[in-house]
Length: 585
Image (tube, rainbow, N blue to C red; front, side, top):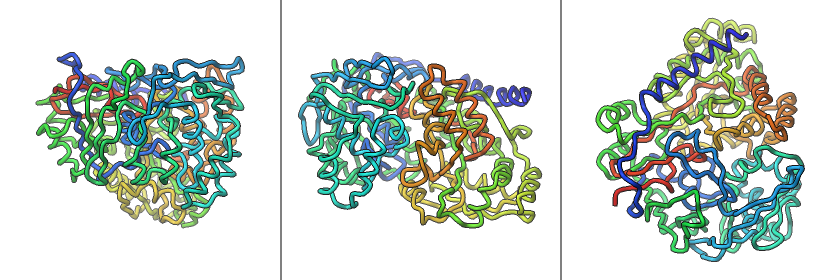
């Protein structure tokens, strides 16, 4: 066993080190200056979410960074994404913690204001309202698993809120106005108290996410969450506000007149304006806009085309940035009780899941993504930048190329000697189409036939969470750490922990995994002063059980125009920090 672990460690770490040597962030030639416009070309025709309640993609978080603030946050890093781990005060100027670690009292800054549809002062009640929105049955918070376990009274509040009929804004407002969460209160305008039933080592990290942003009730209660009307009337708490928003065309953010730089030690807000262009119609179009100087950054360009990476490395090396990200792509299973197809039921057998992981040629997948500069094979749940990571491969194969014969033998053992057919959904982007075609080809060699189902990227999350959707496996699943370092709760303590994320609405990717032993380890890790070894033990347990099939860990590569004079990465967005990037005027 120890030999296998050491061998896996070499395979996992060396390509990352080689990639870092081949492609590192260039040094900035100029001191950052204020002013100018940052222009972003989006691969998708619109934002997948633009509401702190629902935004849960790295791309939505990149934009939300500019228009939201939290109690605490990260200041960005010029070196590497994993270096942005130092929490700093944001809208809170200070906080007190009780000796048992269960109650936090935050004292808010007194010089912070909303902008956009209202310019009033931000008060503690705005945080209370923002958290009370989390359970809105019209559209609940995108990562409810964190708050189910971290805030006292939250689950009971949500159970009551679920009884409110959807499609009725007045009923929603009436419930929020008349019900309280026992663990969240605002004794006065400048004081916010949040209580938990247990001590949580990562409590401040949880509160750093965009979900926990102040929201003015007098504005948000007029609109359904993340509706077009909400987006156009976005109540900003950040340094920028929505000047205009045209669905499928353009988003323009402008520096808020009442933004006070001295109140924000995390966001320099160098540029005066940020423009997001949604009219590009393909990867090549996005890259061409950057090369022509019509755009400075991309959005939703998961992996730039390999030819573009080579061009920038050879001719524009000062305009390409790369960082290990801790992000990963993986295959999930439709484990909802409603999923009763032959394929879905087959995947409930461990031997079938093992057969699928042996059928995957991870070396082939890495090459399809651009080689070691863009990705490395992954065989476990925890990735390299996350607390508790110890390189581990429960099903090793020579050179990470898979083992079709072993896969066939496992299928036969499970009762499928003639192979198995699976409906495989994927997102219609270049990256996921490549993954789908590659996995289909390799799985066929192991006797697994995949029927590919294309789903438009903008409809992906609605499709994957709809119980009536037809699919057995998802080839469009991915994650990025919600923060770097101690973010293991997201995976082992959240998505895969049935105490935090029970099967049903809000269960990420419809994973619906339940393992009492994992839940027990997670409950042990949350209050621990040394949770790393506990998470490492949980990782080995769950990675062997295969609640999903890890494919590869991604590096983040950003192509930029020559107008960028100061670069920064964001831990939360796991890509560019647009509030700390400067451009030539």
